[in-house]
Every structure is written in structure tokens, then in C-alpha cells.
Length: 396
Image (cartoon, rainbow, N blue to C red; front, side, top):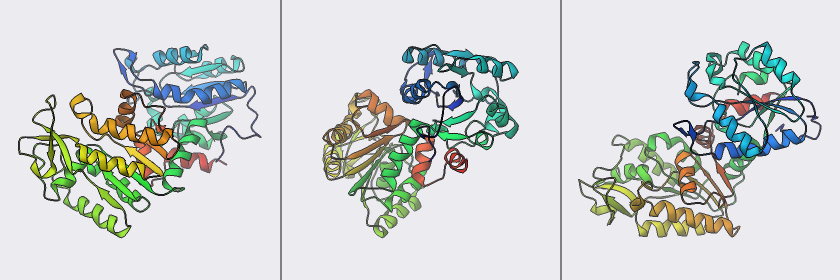
């Protein structure tokens, strides 16, 4: 893996095109969550200290090749400038000869951020002429956007055909953590997986069953399994036509000797803003919704966590947005963080809702590694080769 720590790489005075993911949540023009911005700071500081001229490429939202004022990167450049305590020159104009001139005139160690790369329709089309046009702005390309690397876009994939290309610090750390969780496993290894639909994560489950000792299924996905194993799930989120997928999971678990764990008791309510009631999974009524796991299930999961040496968590255990249904997610989080803090487990968490839960309960420092990636994280766990990773590995 060629990364920017390569001892033979002289960065002084070099124009470095740095692709990062700044697709952060915003409300009324204000940034509401900055994890992705914070993640890229080590790479920027490293390049700046090496006296490179940094040119940041990124996007926010899905403008589909249109210039949309509300999707400008300007407020993000201002936030990043504040966090770095360093001036960032924001280039709002389309990429042209003037862009190149300004970059050439920039001082060593400087930072320039280009406007939303997706304002160019050629970006998502992975147009090779556009990729070449971007590459002409720099001497070196660095991808530090793991969370975008499942996309065959010009600034992720095509650009590597025209310029020496390297892995950044964050993407290297991300791949290393996921390699350790999937290929360099210290057993026993467990997966705790939640989310609304089992159909969106069936490939992940079946890929990891081959390597993991325990797969704990919670959230809406668990409702689907309960339904297809003869339990009444009432008005709960559930995929009613997933019998074959559920059957496949249990068949593979037997084949690869992986234990499947689903809730034995749950917290139910008749409405999302209601007060929860603990019930055995056999006792859910037609007008009730399963919104969290119960204390017996929490206890079982805690035992699995304490007996594991490697753990992957993706997806909350319930509707944690309502404090009445947050106990399962919170207790799982506490158990993982205690075990990780005592240095007795290698723990990785990832996915948008998972990160939101971690931030809500203030546990961002209690995992070995937290991935801010969504789709790329899940596709990697499915065993797919991500276009952005493949492109960097081919650029040798």
C-alpha cells in the first residue's frame, strides 16, 4: 500500500490534490456534526508540515452537476480553517486556467479548497477528460476519503490514471482496522448488527458468518427473524417476505459453526413516543411495536462482549432517539467501551446511526476504531473491492 508516509516521497513544494469526505450534516446553513471534518485533520497537518501545497477536493450532498448555493463547501472551509487555526483559500470559481495559476502561486504549506466537486456533472460520470483536467492542478494525488471510495467518480477513480497516487493517513487507518476485523482476527470474534432491513445487510451477515463466532442481530432486522421463526411482532418494522433470507442465515450459521443470537425479551409500545413495557418475545400483541431489546437480551449480549477478543458493531439495538427505548443501545455501548478501555478487546464501530448513538452517549473515545463511512464501510464488509481502493492499488 503506497501511502504518504513513504520515506521516498518528497512533498516539499509539491501540489497535493487531497480528496476527502466533507459531506457533513447541515441545518439552516450550520454544520451539526463535525466527525468527518475532524478525521481529516491529521493528514492535512502532516502535508502542511511537509511544506506541500494542499488542494482539497470534496463534495456535499447530491447536486447532480448543478451549482446549488446551499451545497457550497464555503461554510465547511470556514469550520476547517477554525479547527486548524490556519487560513484556507476558498476557490468558488469553476476549475480553469486561473485555478491552476492561483495554486501555482500559493506558498508552501498553504491550503486551498475547491468548490463542491459534484457541481461538475463529469464527476459522478467518472469522465476521464475531467479527471485529467483535475489531475493537471497537482503533482501528487492523495485519497483520504474511504467513505467515498465505493464510488467510481472522477476524483476518486479516474484521476489515478493521470497522476502519482497515494493513500492518506485516515484511509490507511480505516483499511487496517477493517482488515484486522475481517482477515487478521483474534478469536472469539463477534458481530452485533442492527438496522431496519435485513435485506440491506444479508450479504454482510453471510460473509462474516464464515469468519465470526457470534452474530447478534438486533433492531428491525431481529423483528424479521422473529417473525419468520413463528413469533408475533405486531406493528413492528419487519420485512414480511424475507423467509428465504432468514433460512439462509441459519443454514450458513450451522455450516460455519457460528452462533446466531436474537432477542429473547423486548421493550414494546403502541406508539413511538410512548412508554416502554418489557415482554417476552412470545407475548407481543398485534397493536404493539418492538422498539428495544429487554434486560435478559442485554445480559446475554454483555456476556458475548465480555467473552470476545474482537468485536464489530453496526446498527443500534432500538429506537434510541426516544429515551424510553435507548437502554439496549446504551448498555451495549457501555459494555464494549469498558472492555475496550481495559484493553481486552479490539473493537470497531461504523455506520451513520451507530456513530450518532456513540456521539449521543459520549463514547467516541471508547472504541479501538470508529468508522464515519456508511456505504463504503458496509460494502467492504460484504467482501466487495471498492473502486477507489482498487484504483490506488493499480497506480504503482
